Length: 110
Length: 112
Image (cartoon, rainbow over all chains, first blue to last red; front, top):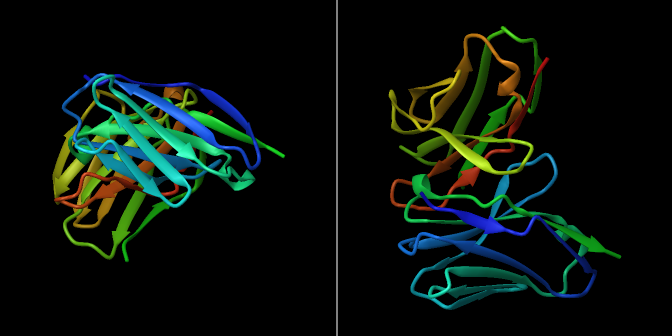
């Protein structure tokens, strides 16, 4: 099966950019998603990228995909305290096939 | 717009007691439905998914079962809870032509 790896923790200063990284093993993943989970809540779909794209920008979010290295990243510009949460990378070919990483806990320091 | 409701939000149950968690989806027809468990280590494990009424696929052998009595209702059950059943349970749905998952707010289950 698919293995998805993420760093467990990331701390940034408010106003700086955050970069959350993810590596995966299944090169046939068609969709690659980023989810956000706030304390005690479910996962919220943030953004996604198709496997035939290298980059996708959505307001403060930029997703970069390096298919050769099977590396996905999420950049959050001008990080705010409200961005503090756990971020999950989830590649897959269908909803049932999505594999979630362990999540990266982003802490935004004032 | 589509919404997903999951309840209760928190539950404390003794070992050996039964369990019933309910999830309903509004604003869509014939969704695919899912139950996930999120352990303390944060990873999500797919427990069950369903593509239609009465159609349940189990991803891992366990003490739990799922049922789908109506198109937009998904229930997670157990006859006798174990300590190891403690965790955060998430219901999710996807469209039949959609690969993205949409999650409920989860149920925190503590088995004592």
